[in-house]
Amino acid sequence: MRCGGKRGRVAYFLYRAASRGLSPFLFFHLQWRKLRGLEHPLRWPERLGHPSSPRPPGPLLWFHAVSLGEGMATIPVIKHCNQQQPNFTILMTTTTTSAFEVIKDRLPNGIIYQFAPIDTPAAVDAFLGYWKPNAVFLMESELWPNLIVSASEKGILVALLNARISAKSFKFWSGPTALPLISLMLSKFSLIAPLSTLEAIRFQLLQAPPFIINFAGDLKYAVGDVDVSEKENSKIEDLQLQLADRPVWMAASIHKGEDEVMILVHKALIRIYPSVVTIIVPRNPQHGRQISLALQREGLHVVLRSQTEKILPSTNFYVVDTLGELRSLYRLTPIAVLGGSFLPGLAGHNISEAAAAGCAVLTGPYVGHFSHMVLEMQQLNHLSVMQVSSKELMGALNMLLGNAEALEAHRLAAKQAFLALSSGVVRNVWNLIDAHVLKGLLGN
Image 1: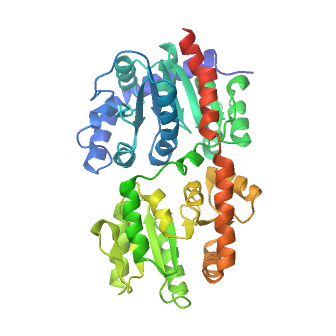
Image 2: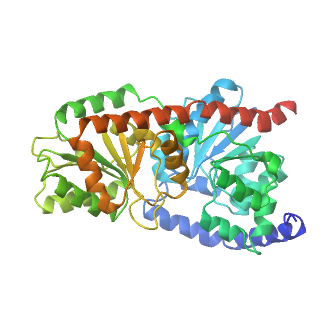
Image 3: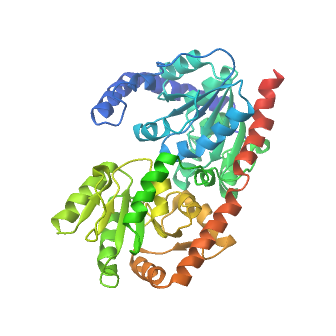
C-alpha cells in the first residue's frame, strides 16, 4: 500500500515548515562554512537561490551533482546533451567548492555553472523562479523534499541518474515517519536510473513507481573515458621522464588514517626495492601538506606537487596537494591503490579511472556502494581488481612489482573490464532521458 498520499502530504508540510523555520540558522551556518573555506567567498549567495548569471531565453535543463565525483560523472551526459539538443540551455550546479574549482574548467562553452540552493522553501523557490528549468536531473542520492516537490508542482520534470541509496539511508527512509515523505518524493520522478539491481529493489521498496525505474549502466565508468587536455598531457610527460626506470605505485584518494597504512607499506617495500617511489594523492589538499611535513620530519625526501619541484633520485614520496588531476596522474604509475576503503566506516572511490589508464587496480575491503563496480569488473576478469586488507596490501604490491608478467596481466584485465563496462553508458542514459523526459517536453 502506497504512503505517498495524504500521509505523504502531511509529512512534506511538516518538513517544509521545519526547513522554513531553520532558514535563519542555515544562513549563519553558511557564513560559518564560508569562514572555514567550505563555501565560495563571493558566490555563496547562490546557495540561497540568488543567481550570478543571466538566464538565457528558451528551454533550460538543470543537472545537479553534490560534489566532485558525481559532478565528473555528469559532464559526459552534459556534453552529449549539448550535442544532441543545442537549442537547450544547460545549467549545472554542485554543492562543494572543491567540485567548483575543478569542474568550472571542464564544462563545454556555454554551460552555466552555479552553486545549488540549500533545501529551504525560500532558496528553492527563488532558484526555480529565476531559472525556470524545464527538467532537473539529480545525480545519485540527491533526494531533497523541497526541491523535488516544488519542481514537480511547477510542472518541472524530475529524473534521478546513477540513482543509489545507502543501506543506512534506506533504513532511515523505511521508517514509519520518513516512508510517507520518500514515497511522495519518488512519485514525482519521471525517471530513476539505478546503479544496480539492489538499488532498484530499494527504490521499489520505498514505493517508487516500477515503470520509472530503468537500467542504463554506471556513469562513473564514463569519467575514465574523458580525454585529457594537451596541457595536462605535457605536465604528465615531464613527470614520466623523472620517474623512468623506477618502481612506482600510487595511493589514490587517501583519507586520514589511511596515509599511515600507505607509509608503513612504503617502508616495507623500500627494503626490497630501494628506489621505489610512492605517490600519495589525498582527498584533501591540506591533508597532503600535512603528510609532507610529517614525512620530512622523519628525514624522508618528499616532493610536493604544488611546489613544482623535480623528482630526484633521492625522492621517496611524491605527494599531490592539488585537486582535479587524478585522472591524468594515473598515467604515471602501473599500480593504483584506491583509498577510502582500508578503514571501517569508509565507502570506497571510483576505480574506473585507474582501470581506464591501464593500472593494476587494488582496493580495500570497505567499498560501500562501489561494491557493485568491483563485482562487475571481477566477474568480467578476476584479475581486474584486487581487493585486499591493510595487512595484505604489502604482499600484493610486492607480487606486482616483482613479477612483470603478473603486473601486465592485471593491467590488461583492468583496462579490458573498463572498456567492456563503459561502452555505451552515456548513450544508454541519454536514450532513457530522451524517452522519459525530453519527449514529454518536446511533445508539449
